[in-house]
Length: 151
Image (cartoon, rainbow, N blue to C red; front, side):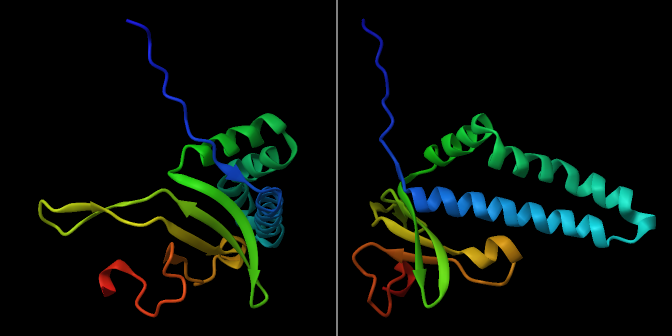
């Protein structure tokens, strides 16, 4: 019996999305580095130990093509179809379009739901603000009650 190979679907990642990721990593690295610079001298070693590993990874993602490719491969493993970046109202968003999701009502009933657009504000990633993620069902972008639990 011949061996069956499962071929993964091709996921689209736009150049703008990749550039935005690299900028976010650089900005996060600068933030962690700044935390070390402003740390109390008595606790500087602890802050370096806390931030050092993350800073090393972030630097590698931005400068080492192999490390970047590993991160991109992890993106491809997510249940998404496409990733891109948009601007809306002066705010940048990273956007992903998910594959169709499986919905359940808590019992034995299950049905296939829509694909979702997932909007992540870029300032959430860089500053850790209380910005909200947006989950918008495909085809119901302009509806008022667009979430599954509202219908």
